Image (cartoon, rainbow, N blue to C red; front, side, top):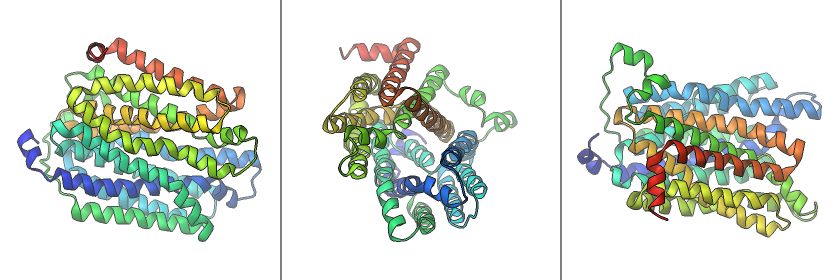
Length: 413
């Protein structure tokens, strides 16, 4: 879509509708996680070690399959449209969620978690649709705003899921989650408008369009695209490595006294709160002053905020530092997506966002394994330090391989 058509498109209405839908999707994706291991333990007479092992498999299955199939769905979306992919993802995952509430053993649950990964892609296709319809001068702010939908949903999801499991049952929560996804699918089908012109491809393009090598041939700066995709993986890996240990770290800081679970929930929620406030503003600043400035400053800020988290002795200091991490996330994730959008042809918008989702899923999978392993071997503080080191490595990778980002950043100093 050219810039004139972007200006005339109902991108503001689409943004409002998809913000609500990604909020619903965020709740649906995250509300089952607090009790997934409990659900696993109900499906057999397992030892503590077996529950941990099977829970890890169940958790990783969705991300592994998502990483594999996302590029295929993305290539299809660029040929058939993003709206139909939204409908496919929401109803497909609703079916998987509903069936999870009916399983009788852990292997059925594992298979359905893989099926959920097969139908994944709602949020990435919502991002691709907004990126393809929004005037490029507003893309940073629009994508930053859209990210707050899924972020706030994922923020509220664990709280809502825990409450539903207490009031009803774990199985009922899966049925409620499926209903939420159906609602998102209906809203997407009825209210989202997409002006889509199918892309004509050669036979060779059809065969290679879903492959990263074939996709990169469409970009003027393929090395930049590769570096940005790995940046998504690094940032997500760092965030996810903290998730498995944050409640245990809070418990240690509180000396196992007081409302540990409640405080841990607040600490876990703080990055999401600041992210909601910061992401649209940082996106708008990037639109006006250069996205690379926001990106590079975001890496430095995140590194500075992560290191002291491993050495704090006060829960209040930890809370403040976690609040600051939400600001860095608001600088990193939307800005990476904005740079991908601004450096991608319209014909590859969905494909590149799907590859971005693949790398994010890999970050989720490796991050949870890394965080748990490091905490078990060396202690909680090493997890925060390693995350800071990973982000600094990512910063240096961008600095060394992408002079354009480095030059633009220098001008702000």
